[in-house]
Length: 118
Length: 111
Image (cartoon, rainbow over all chains, first blue to last red; front, side, top):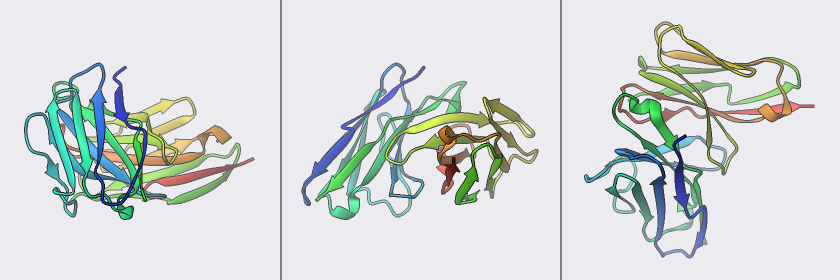
């Protein structure tokens, strides 16, 4: 089946630094990738939708200058948390979808990245 | 904007008992998804429902989508400790749309 990987799985950084999280579709081409974040004991919240080769669409309330998303290829999307602060500590999950017959039927989730900002 | 209500938020069930989790959308859905998660880990896809009145089963878990495609229920029969976790319903209103999630249901199984 389709596999989506995320790297790193866990990262600890100092406040003020930037952190990049990668999301890769390993055996399929993902025309659309989604980024979610999850706070402890809460559900997933969609942050943004990225389409290959175009600018990401951010959900209301998500700072696009703080959470930079790049979808440079059909198999890779990156989320960069710039000038990270402790309140950015969270679990970030990406998902990759394929267009075509499957549509959102074929959206696959990565294993997530736990970010801790000290 | 689309809202997805999931209930109950938390559920404690004696092992062997049946249980039901509900998910209701304010809009007609293209697809309704059920996932299981342990916090800090990825999502485990359980099943996806698309057709009004559709019902799917996987082992002891059954999910149904109502005819209007706005409400779904997840039913676990004869619950086991392995069923414990967070159950999330997700929904998309269009074929290429993003999936919006409910707040989740924390299921605890008592031995």
